[in-house]
Amino acid sequence: MPFTEATIMEVQRMTVVVPLSVPRMASETAVLRGYTIPKGSVIVPNLWSVHRDPNIWERPDDFHPTRFLDENGQLIKRETFIPFGIGKRVCMGEQLAKMELFLMFVNLMQNFTFLYPENAAKPAMEGRFGLTLAPFPFNIIALKR
Image 1 (cartoon, rainbow, N blue to C red):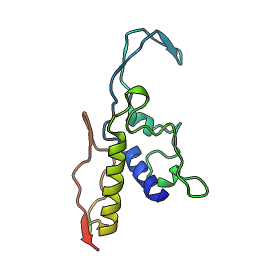
Image 2: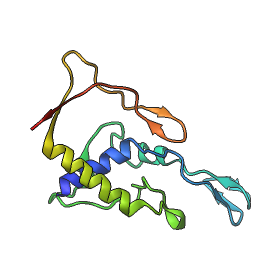
Image 3: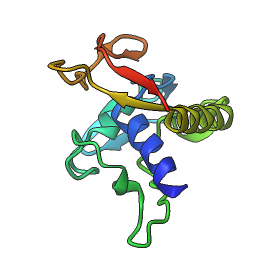
């Protein structure tokens, strides 16, 4: 099951549902990479940016579930993988969402074969930014196994 979990994680990394996390407030003045962040400043974590940063992820725009597997095929927990946020205000539905994602993904993969329609363009990976990152419309064929 590690490859299945890695695939789900890679989908989450590439298509962060909520690209901007819950705003935070600086509890004290801090200096980060030469920039002063005054006490009381509102900070909005950009989860999409973290998951697409080439300094963190090799070839971040390519879909590679194996980036979450070690040389023995076991799942790697990467601290830079934060689709549900980070710290004290991480999404309280994280565990439920992970279980539901796993069950839905496995059920779909076991019961259907997915194909692109003939001459159809592959789906765009960019999506529409808003409060959530929504995919552009695309067509697929789902054949019952």
